[in-house]
Structure formats: C-alpha cells, structure tokens
Length: 451
Image 1 (tube, rainbow, N blue to C red):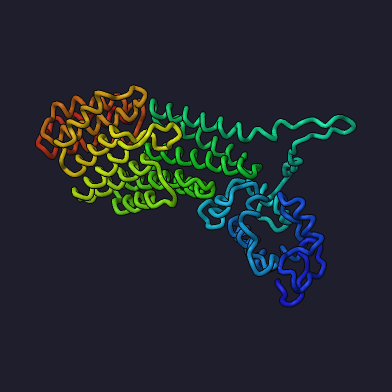
Image 2 (image 1 turned 90 degrees about the vertical axis):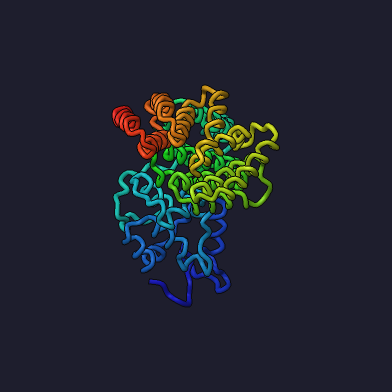
C-alpha cells in the first residue's frame, strides 16, 4: 500500500528529501542517468503497492506498464512514455497503443522481455519467465577485448544503411504487388515490420527518426495489402499504426499521405462522410504539401462526394486535383509521384460510374487503357473491371462481358478483392438493364474462377 508523508527512494530505499519530487535519490538518479537505456531496479515496496498488485492481477501488460508509469513513487508527474518505451525497446507510439489496449501483448516472448527489462519480480507475474535470454552488452563504437586490442565495431553505423536498404526492398515489394497481387507479400511484410521494430529499439537521434519513417512506410504498405484482400478492418488498423509512427517521425508529407490512405479505405467501405473527413485532414496538414499530395487527397475527397451522389462537389474536387497534378514537377522523392493528370482522369472515370454517368467514363477509361504500363498488371485488371461496369451501365452487354472476361484472367492471378467487387457490380448492372443471360454467364464465371 502507499503511504503519505515520508517518501523513500524506489532504488535503494533511502529517505527522499522533501523537495525531491522524483522516485530516486540523487546517487541513484546519477547512476540511472548514466545508464538511461535501462530501467532502474526498484525496491520491493514499489511492486507491493495496491496499485501495482491490482495491475499485475489483471494479467494485462498494458495495464501494468500504465500503472508503472503513474506510480506515486515517480512524483507528481507520470514517468514519460518516451523513457519507458526506450527501456522496453519499442517506440513511444507502440507503448501508447499497448497502454490504450489497442495492441494487446499476448506473445510470451514479448511478455518475458518486457517483464525482464522492467525487473518485475517473478513471483508477481502471471506467466513463467523460465530461462530468460540474458541481456547482452549494448554495442558501442569500440569492442575492447580482454588483453587484446580495441576493435572498431562496424555495427555502430549499420542502421542508416539498413534503413535505406529496407526502403529499396519496399519499392521491390510494391513492384511485386503490382504484378501478382497482395497475398504472397502479406506474411513477408509482417516479418519485415518485426525486423524494423527491432532496429528501432536500439536506435537514437536521426537514425531513430529515419527508422520511424521506414516503419511507417512498411505499416502503410501492409495496410494496403490487407485492403486489396478485402480485410478493411485490418487495413485500417495497420494504417492507424502507420499514422502513429509517421507522426512520431515528424514527417508531415507522410502523415498527409497516410491520412489520404485512410480515406481510401473508408471509401472502399462505402463510408463517404469518413472518406471526406480523412481527405480534408490530409489537406489540412501543417506545413506545405507537394502538388501531387494535394491532388491525391482531393481525388479521395471526390470519391467521397461521388458516394454521396453530389455531382457538383465531386466535379469541383476533381478539377482541383487535376490542376495540382498538372502543375507538379517531376520528383522521384514525392511519395504521391504516381498521381499524374492521367491518373486523376482514370479516378474521375470511376467517380462518373459511381454517380450513374457511365457514358462520361467510357472514353476516359478506353484512352487510359491504350496508354497502360504493363508493370501495373493488378491495376489493369481493376481498370478493365471498371470499364466492364461502364459498358454494362450504358446498355452494351456484349462489350461488358468481353471486357469482364479479360479482367477475370488477371483477377484470378492477383486475387484482388477490389477487382472482384467491380466484376460483381458489372454482373448486377447487366441483370438490372435486362441482359439476364449475360449476367448469369458472368456470375457463373466469377463463381468458378475466383475461388
């Protein structure tokens, strides 16, 4: 239980001075600051308060770390999340999600690692720490061998190189995704996220910020993969994680881009108000945005208005998107560099179909397909499916069926949920416009092809 009045050092148990609002006495504090990468070893009184016993009895590591940070021994203010996150070897954003219950820690290895790093007494834990892996010495710039020379530690400079290597790998993954779809990449992307988080745990300064950016990019990409499989809940969860990491990295362009991606997921879920809200949040990002970042966010705002059947607002957003895309300089570093005027025109065609004006979409879709790049195979299938919807909506069932069958070949390879959804929509439109035989044929082909 806690006591009012006299306070004692959480490290050595010595009586604390009245003006000392911290949890450690001066000698312990000096020792702790010299070794700030490790949590202090706290005395038994710290762990046997009602607050910590109740937290440990909950068998939830999120409750435990929150109680640890807010323990009265730390003084009037809670222990900063940044300090505790550093001791646990995770990012502040990860710790925030664990404390909030958004990321429940169930993996035994992580439970053991967190308990070991906080020096929680084993008899208070709800799991067996067993033979925990010993903590290895932290690598410094020089390895001093017993009775031998001092050896330069090359690993001291590997993290920046690894960060660049991972971004190159991510670009290669994006190429594979464009060619074959998301399914083969999902487990690989998750493994890479685990690896990046491991690198983050031991990084500092600019390298830490750069790795936060890399982690945000991988989380955003993993969210995209889930979106294309049709798992929109997982897609939004990964995008939320990506946004936390991007905000922690301090990159305003990436923050804006991920908000746009959240808008894209919301429009796939047919939640227009949410899609518009996320798109506007992307545009209201503090600091200047590139023209293409503005264009891709406005494109998303247009999609939201199309779902609401607001023709004027949709047209206005598309006009602004096209203007920004047309004004954009070529910049390989722009995360939205793909948002060209041609891209905006293709997205506009999708909006016209959504607004019930497929005749406006036909010419744009056909022109875009004539200039299509072969390395965007999965999106070719999606565009063909949209063209099939446009043909069905304008009363051209033969053309709709022909185009849909071409789309199906690619959809069977890539297993893109977005493409399959458009093909099902084409079959519904065929039935609604009186082309029953065509609709039944397409439905049968979809059932037998997209297993």
